[in-house]
Length: 306
Ligand code: AMP
Image (cartoon, rainbow, N blue to C red; front, side, top):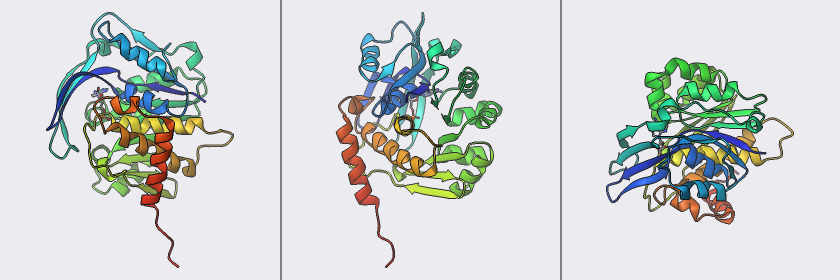
């Protein structure tokens, strides 16, 4: 089954304490769509300007990513620039140029409106809701968000949460949204706002998955060398959504399926941070994903008490 992915597509400039690279392929939807494409067909909804390199469009096309929903309009592509601190877990946004994104209205091609799995990658919650308004039979809707929207569009975000099955956000955002310091309390509170499932990402410390009377703590895959954490969360969401959509869906999305999906998302994200932009994902194949899933299981598993 396909997964529809909507979000930002942009050109990023990223500085770490070691390196700086400009005009890289980035954006929440770029990472999420490529992450999902390791498991299933993807329908990409987003906007780029005239300056967006053809090579990037061709790369999307070379994956299982349908581009009928990609708008190319006059003007410049969305640009974001960020700088990481020494721990590579915290970063400052140096600049944002919305450009063609400023007047973006996601319009779904007719053939996308009946897609059952939807990933609303990080964009303004009003735009995420606008996508849902056009969908006829969504079966499982996942939304990602960021601190900016909790600050400036909280009402829109709360309205969106009533319509989604799962919210993905990071630890700081979960605390900001709920006012709770405990992530365990925050996860339960966010479920009360609408989503049946919540995933709280903790960067290099893994993620927490909350369901009704169910909880899963997934570690992060341990890496010696992290080059660029940009897009880890989006790749995680894409891998998770793509894996779910790839399953034979005769029944509902269960917590057990989501546990596995969270691990696949973590595996994809762990690869993504090994290089800037989507460079590591470009070189990856499905065997690499399965191999790391296996290694991850071995190093995270422990025995029951005898
Ligand atoms: P992440 O590292 O998961 O937070 O995602 C980083 C990506 O988000 C970058 O590639 C940026 O282009 C994109 N991004 C940054 N700010 C925004 C924003 N306000 N709306 C949508 N996408 C954004």
